[in-house]
Length: 249
Image (cartoon, rainbow, N blue to C red; front, side, top):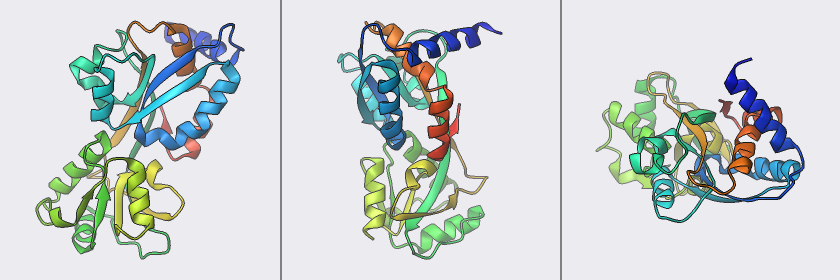
């Protein structure tokens, strides 16, 4: 058994054992995993005795929060967060631990006709034919959506119908209410009541967003932070991640 496996097992044992001293952990988390946390948070709290305060945000908001001087204990964030030197400096040194990944997809209002998006050309036509399109450009996933739109050469053509939302939940709200005809974002977010997932982006345009984890540098709750990360690699957490439409690790 390698060192990483031993460390993971020790951390997992800590996560699942009743806490000798309950910690209050402040967590920075990518908004694209908010749905998963509705199940992960209570399960971890019950198993460990620790309590979580979770700050959800897009990648730019998470970077701003991490570098604001306000303390936090652990980050479970899009990998793009760690590419910002100032934000990465707020995490412990060494490699981060990948928790989950998910690709981009297209959704429409439940019961609405589903456009063909099986190829890059079909995807392009679907967006050109749509009356309105919702996404979150100021996020790691939204940036990849915009790159895909740019790759098929229609950035200018759809500019007038693109609705820039501030958070993933606003995409769901806009599409379910009929305010936007199409939603473009992470597949796990689009798998929501009121929406029908049309499918993933075509293979030649697909990009995955990876959520990765690390304790904060200087946290006073380092052991509890490690226990949370170990819990996210446990069978219970993996089952939730899979059920919500993400791929573990």
